[in-house]
Amino acid sequence: MLNNLRGWLGAGCFMLVAAGASVQASEDVVSYDDPWEKVNRATFAFNDTLDTWVLKPVAKGYDTVTPKPVQGLVTNFFQNLGEIRNVANSLLQFELKEAGVSTGRFLVNSTVGMLGMVDVGTAVGMDHKYNDFGMTLARWHVPSGPYVVLPVLGPRTVRSTAGLLPDSAADPVTYVTPSHDKTWLQVTDTVNFRADLLDKEGLVVGDKYTFIRDAYLQRRAFLITGEAPRDDF
Image (cartoon, rainbow, N blue to C red; front, top):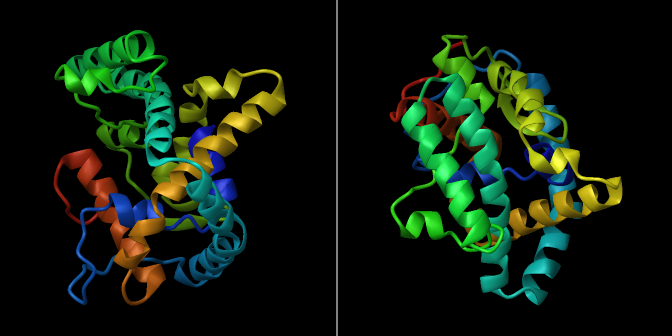
């Protein structure tokens, strides 16, 4: 369960949101309803501390000894494995064209692209498009529910939390044996991911909790609708 382990090691890997969100850090950022804010802030503080003292130092060491081109190959490898999740959820959403593109990407990148380390798919016009079961539930008109910060796993909505187990089932690494090989793959993905965010930490301005919450919810809205409206609660 790659995304979950990213959360486990990087409980404070808040920069995931900041790096991927289409949001400007300013006083004009939309404020979202957050009925569980008191508990969420406490959990966020725990996650942030874990990131500061565990994941970030490891990521810095990894970044120092691992050339950027190699980090890019690692990123592509794990992104390619994620195409299986993309295919499954596109089919569940009856998005047959997107499912076909993701299937083509997986086949081309896994063969010509050396097990996915080289993104040949994008080069030939098959662009990557992220998908997950939380997005599938949204397409099925399941309400997002309140914003919640999970211990270790970080920012979510109730709806995206419900997608964790189905997405894990679509993750090939879940089935890797022996277990220490699976752990090695998950740790590599997480540390490589965190290292890529080291130079993006300056994106967070003002109250970190508020920024991350709003950025996360806007990013989820963008992934689901292509726009950035308020998420439904």
